Structure formats: structure tokens, C-alpha cells
Amino acid sequence: MVHAYILIQTEVGKAAAVASEIAGLPGVTIAEDVTGPYDVIVVAEAENVDQLGQLVVARVQGVEGITRTLTCPVVHLAHS
Image 1: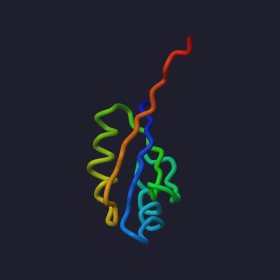
Image 2 (image 1 turned 30 degrees about the vertical axis):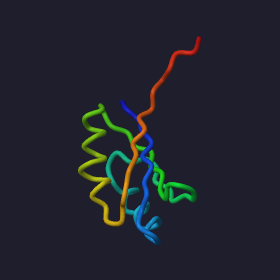
Image 3 (image 1 turned 45 degrees about the vertical axis):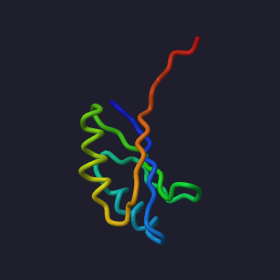
């Protein structure tokens, strides 16, 4: 299972609507509107990196009001 944070910038005034729509997408576990350089932060999961890419490109980026996304896959680094 691959997990990722998706950081989203939206058009002015669209953050709440974007977060609400994305929250209903399969593979999305959390979608929150936030303040700061990004407007929405999403936690997503997929079976593999290819499916994660399909979720982001085919579904998330298709939501009206999004201007830019940044996908940050979670890595599990071994502690020394």
C-alpha cells in the first residue's frame, strides 16, 4: 500500500468546495481545507505508485477549481 499527501492550490474562494469534492473520491482518506501556501491537503492511499498516479492525474486534477498539485509519497526510512 502506498500513502501520499497531496498539496493543492485552488482558485480564490474554491478551497472548501474542492476539499468536499475530493473527500468523496475512492482512495482519499482525508481532505482538509487549510491556510498557508496550499489551500487543501489530502491524504490518499493506493495499491501501488501507478494507481496513486492515476488517482492524482485522472481524478484529483480533474476537480474544478484546482490550479496546482504537489504529490508527496510517504517513505518509511530505517532508523539507525
